[in-house]
Length: 367
Ligand SMILES: NC(=O)C1=CN([C@@H]2O[C@H](COP(=O)(O)OP(=O)(O)OC[C@H]3O[C@@H](n4cnc5c(N)ncnc54)[C@H](O)[C@@H]3O)[C@@H](O)[C@H]2O)C=CC1
Ligand SMILES: CC(C)CC(=O)C(=O)O
Ligand SMILES: [Mg+2]
Image (cartoon, rainbow, N blue to C red; front, side, top):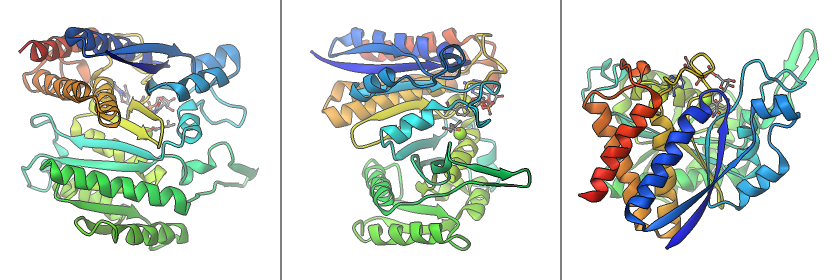
């Protein structure tokens, strides 16, 4: 039986609350059929770790994560814990940069009718698109490098490179191809930018057009980010794959999370050439931490994305099947009315929701 090493960052706030039951769910599922094994190693990092030890991502933890087959991360950061430059502790940004995780994959889809915004434009079809957020440069390149010149001026730098952009666009076109083959997408990629105002984005769009030539079966469209924000509210059904700069993707993906029914439902993956981190789109939610009411579904769906990625890249069909089982189990729980956490109108605890998903997924293994 093949075994896989999974590095786990429990992080801050609600991080451990959503991570621990998710790891238990993955363990139960793998044991349920015995086709592969997952070995989890919990590693230190985050705002809490920085507060106690003065370092947010220890070198040894980074080295171990780099060697692992995949990395699971919940959320890091606490508003009151800051670096000397006044910004928040955010080792997840360092991880993305250190490991070259250029493709931030943020799928947006609906379980049942959980999307009030998407019906605003009158179209009743379900929403199903993916935001591919460049995750190592763009405006986030400036992280830790910004400059407050004096009390009247501050500056940050936005960086776009050809090498990363080419990889990013190829990833997005490949994804659109895959979704078309799966009958899930229309085979269209929108490059979302601000090429009307900034040279860096005109450069970004030019590289997009160049790479599009290698994918003649996929329609390549370009759109400005401001109009895209409006269309995402008015007619999200026209989108299939959107590819964009880091900061724009950060913002639009929280809009996407709202379409799914809230941040507690939205998963993500940050994928590079060798490593990948799987984590929810949400943060450490300090306002509800320690109450046992955090919605674990975004974390659970991120873990399902990990199984799917491992399954695809390591040729493990059993892992891809489990990813699908988790997905269907979540759908069953959400559409049948529960158990659900308070953010979705329920009264269940984090643990009760994961237990319901686990039972439904294990029942599918037995069937
Ligand atoms: N990738 C990461 O690790 C991220 C970390 N952060 C950090 O997290 C901290 C809090 O940031 P916020 O802006 O408050 O964003 P947040 O995503 O933590 O919370 C925003 C709102 O959504 C709710 N929420 C988030 N996740 C939820 C869940 N699973 N279940 C139920 N409700 C949930 C929260 O209670 C809050 O009302 C900050 O330190 C921030 O820097 C923020 C975003 C992403
Ligand atoms: C807090 C940031 C580091 C990250 C973020 O908002 C995100 O990954 O969506
Ligand atoms: Mg964000």
